[in-house]
Structure formats: structure tokens, C-alpha cells
Length: 486
Image (tube, helix red, strand yellow):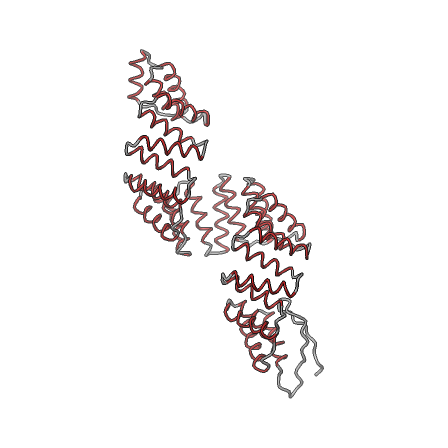
């Protein structure tokens, strides 16, 4: 048999010359390595490993066989074995940059970021223009939340390889994390220009449109991603989010259904579909979806918190409290779960527990306007009006357009008989929202208390025109004291 020349094709391993086996001769280490490559390329990783193992048994110094076996172990998720083989490869050949790069990939997968960075540094030291190593190191910096360092590495990768679509896409992710949406948009667009059927870049650009509130454009990009990759569960889920934002709940549910059909263990899609059912007031369906998300991912704090909201809506406050408590157990820094649990305690009339939870939420998130507002309501319910007013005021300071906080502060001022301040707050609510019927009713009562009966009647008429049911006892008093029937 003539000698055969093959090219090693296992993920751009190297150009590898191997010699075929003549009849009557025993296979060499090269033959086993070669056969391993064939099995690898066919997706038969176990058989590939067996052949690479035979190769290193025959030739313990066979660098490429160790490297190739590391690739196969990585494919099977056997990360420790992969690391051991890459380590052996670089021991035998300290200048083997690809082995450092690939060992870095496995370290990252294991969450060993500093070890991964050290390996990418070594790979770059050996090959200064190693674009993939820069990109991969950027990915580790991204995972560590070091977005500026990530951006610098992605930029370097693209200096080396100007048409590096993956680099543009990844830099876009980092820009998005920094809230630099226009720069992210530009990078995703460039990635698409280089690689017109880049489904991930379309999905990611859709996320930027979503963040900017441009939901129709987001939907168009998610749709393009799905057109390119019909089984793209993430894009279906994201398109569902955009439809939900547009109030198109049935379309949102259809998209989550498709995402779940493609990926039955997609916990986020169950959670998100639950959110739509919640919005539609279908709390039992919402609870079922949150429960499924938790079944798939038992430590899913968000799903526990969301299920708690649905239980709260059904008046099942103890179940709600249990879910919020579980969310807090999973994530002790979960400010929203404390806030929500406080609200459930509020509904049970357990105001001290509610105040404690709102206070904890504020401690975690000092600019949490809703927690200040709700703590104000709890103080109000306890008759601690000055504390209530202080919290409503803080909520308004954080969120100047907070209508409910103005309205409730007005009620507290009214309880303190500070009618001018109450009227000022109700007037502010009406400035913010001329259709806020309750504010007209409340201001009417305040005007009545100051003897301004004509203004009180004008507000009564306006409140009634907006559909508010003005208290009959108040109307009776207003008729008697003003000498008018309407």
C-alpha cells in the first residue's frame, strides 16, 4: 500500500503527516492518531479517545495525540481529562499556543477565570497576533464583569482580523452591558455585514432595540434570527418579551410555546410565559408555569418571587410569603423579594413585619422608590403619619413622577388636617395624569374641608365623569353644607 498523506482537521489542530499501514505491519502511533481524527470528525468521540490513547501508549511523547484527545474529552464534557491532556501537550511542547488556548477554554467553562486568562496570556506571548486568543481572553474578562478589558481584547482581535464577525458580536455584548447601546448596535450591524446569516448577531441587535424601547425593530431582528435558524429557542423567547411589551399577549404566549417546544427544559421561557399569564390575570396558569420553571431549576429565585406575586393576587398570602422567603434564601441580596414579601405582610395587616422587609429592601437598594412608598403605606396604616410622609417624600425625590406617592402623601396630609399641602399633592397628580379620577375625588374632599364648595363640586363632577364612585356620605355632607344638590 502506498503511503498516505492526511491533514489533521480536528478544529484546526495542525498539518499532520501520517503514514498508512502496510499489510502485515502493526499500526503505529500515527495510524491510531489518524484513526482518532476520523472518529472525531464523525462525532464518535469515545472511539476517538480510544485511538488517541493507543497512540500515546505506543508513543508517550506524541504531543498531537494528547492535544487531540483533549479536544475529544472537551466535546464529551470531561473537562478535567481535557485539561490533563492539554497540560501534557504543553509540557512536551512549551510553545504549543493552541494547547494553551484550548486549555483556557476549559478553565473558563469550569469558572476558573484567572487560570484561563493565564493560558490566553501564554498563547498570545507565543503568537502575538493570535486573534482567537484575544477574543477568548475578552470572553473571560466579560464573564468577570471587566467590560473595558473585554472591549480592549475584542478590539485587538479585530485589528488582527478586520473581518472577525465573532469579535464584533462579542464587543457588542460588552458595549450593551455598559449601556452603550449605539456602539453595541454598530458592532452587531458590522457582524451582520460581514456574515449576513449570523443569527446570534440579529438576536443580539434585537436585544438592543428592545432595550431602547423600539419593539417593532426588535421583533424584526428576532424574526430574521429565527428565519436563519428555525429552532432558535432564545430568539423565540426574546420575541415573546417584545410582544409582551407591546401588549400583544397572545403573540407573546405563542412565541414562548414555540421556545418550549424546541427546548422543553427552557426554564426562562416558562417563567416569561408565566409573566404574560400574570398580566392577563390568569394567575393559575401563571403559577403552573412558574412551578415548572422551578422544577427545572430549583434555585430559580426570580420564579419563586414571581409565583409569590400570583399567590398574592389570589389572596394566598402565606403561600406568597413562603415563596418570597425561598427567593431570599437563594439570593439574600434580592431587594425585590424583600419588597414583595413586605407587601404580602402588609396585606395580612402585619405592618411591623412589612416595615422590616421594606427597610431591608432599601438597605440593599437605596434608590428603591417603591419600597419607600410601600413602607410609607405601612406607617400610614399604623397611624405614624410623619414617618409615612417622610417615606412618600423620599419616593417622590427618587421618582419625581410617582403619582401614587403624591396621592398617598396628600391623604396623609389630609389626615393631619394640612389641607393646603394635600390639595397641592392632588393637583400634582392631576398635572401628571389628567385622567386620575381618585385624585379629583380626594381633592374635592380637601376643598370641602377648607370650605371651597364650588371647587369641591367641580372636582366631584370631574371624578364622576371619569368613572369614580365618590363616597355617598361625603356627597351628603357637601350637599348640606353647600346648599346645592350638585
